[in-house]
Image (cartoon, rainbow over all chains, first blue to last red; front, side, top):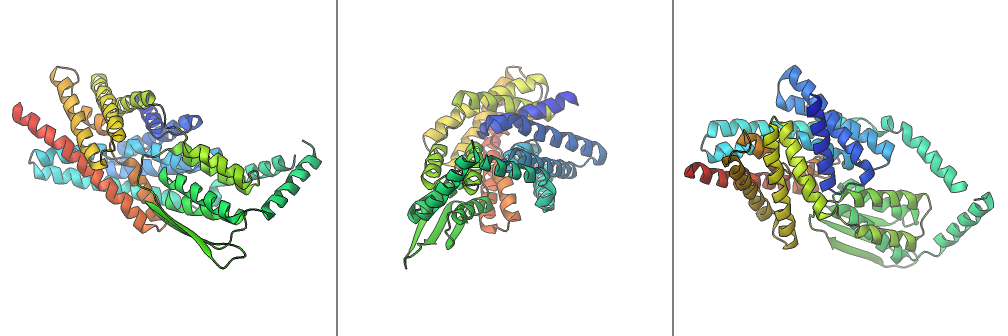
Length: 154
Length: 272
């Protein structure tokens, strides 16, 4: 479990490096991906459905991204894109392709369905997390705004 | 700094706003929008940022129409009967979140009055050419990302090692092909078949335990996570057209990966 979480953290940070994320956000990207994967694992052990577990993981990733975005004053996609990567259905794409080309259409369609399901789950997860109004995340942003005003005058 | 100093500064700021050339403001707005869109920001963030900057410099009659791959803007010039406008084509390109973050910061600081138009322009021009991570680092971390992802999805350490090599080689070739301006789909098909070849070769000489986990780790760098996330974000903000562009991109990339992997797998099974 712990090695899994560390691997998730490293994977997320690697992807954020590929997208030239600012260096000081690496750690937070890693944390986002790690927490998302943690909740994915918990949900998967509990309901044993990959799409539903992805939904849970995505909601957590998106919520944490929003919290970090407000606190670090950085666009939310910085954390969202990196954090969502471990949940993206690479497995599904691979197995769909594999079975299509191996001419095992039943297995292929099963995996294609699962891939679509995960895709939809991720989409809904992001949407659900972004339905919460921004003001619930702004508690820290307000004080920072005041800081800015103070800096301007002194 | 004393209060008087800052009052002088504020005073200067007011003077400056009085004599702003609106054409400069227009260039500034377009540049900000271009950098944001080019480097992977969502449509509404581009529009919002352009409008916020315009509002700060007292440009009220600004209309922007932002698509996934282009910006159309017109602006009325104060005191004249004419409008100025620009159409900018911005092809889908690799994203650079550092630039998006920087433009975000600059736009916030413009609003808090810390930049004059020329200074902001200079800053944006610096941001526009902010370098990508160095090639060595990207290649290394493409490998590390593939390896840790392989481990994450149930691969053993040996599988991860193979994935590391596959990801490593993949990015070297991807960067080379990007330089040669190969079309995206071709790049993906070729990249995924290359990854499959490397994985199968290493697997056949006895490194790695499970070819499936190796493959899943190796192709993860190609999987269209960014396009998909951006598509969803655009749909959520009712930018259906741009969302569709991104979604179609994600779908085509997925199919390209499937084709690349499938062809090599087919040949391998035929030979074996």
